[in-house]
Image (cartoon, rainbow, N blue to C red; front, side, top):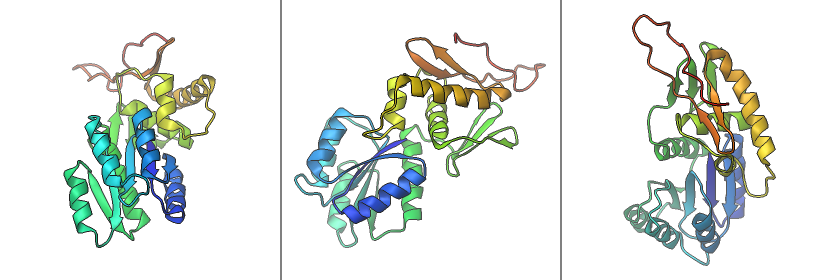
Length: 239
C-alpha cells in the first residue's frame, strides 16, 4: 500500500512517515499543496493523509481538485483541534475521515488500516483465500495454522494480489503500490519478490500465475464441489 502524506510541519511529518513505514506502508511526503496536487495528478496512491493548513495551496483546494478529477482515493484530513468549520468543509468536499491534532499514532494507524481496506473494496480485516489467511491489522499471513515468514515487501505484494484476486496486476502497478519516490526497483527485482512469495504460499496450493509480458494474477480458489477434497487447487493458468 502506498500513502501520500501532505504535511508542512516537518517534525510531525517525519514522525508520521517513520511510523507508517514501520507499519509496512510505502510513504511519500510533500510539504505544500502545490506539490500534493501535482503528485496526485500524475501518480497512483492508496491513501492521502492531508493537512488542511498547507502553504501555496490549501488542503481544501487540493481535496476539491482531487474530487473534481473523479478520483475516489480515500482521504484522511488532519486539522487543528478547534477548526470544526474546516473539518465540516473537508467532509463536504469528499474527505473520508478526519483527525484533530494532537492525536495518538496508534489511532491514526487504525484509521489508515480502515481507509485502505475501504479503498480496496472494504471487507473484513482477515482475508481468507483457500488455506491462506491474511490478517490486515496484524499484517500476518498463515497457510493453515502455520505462520509464514514474509518480508515487508513480500507482505505488501501479497496484500496487493489478494485485493485483486483473479485480476491481472502488471509489474508497473506493483511498483506504484509498493515503492516510494527515489526507490530504484527494477522489473527483475519484482520478479524476485514474486518468486520468493510464490515459493512460500504454493505449499498450500495457492498459486500466483505469470502472464508473460503482462503481469501476475493470484488465481481464484474454487469452491469445493460435493465429494471433492477441500483445498484442491484451481486449474493452473499459464506460467
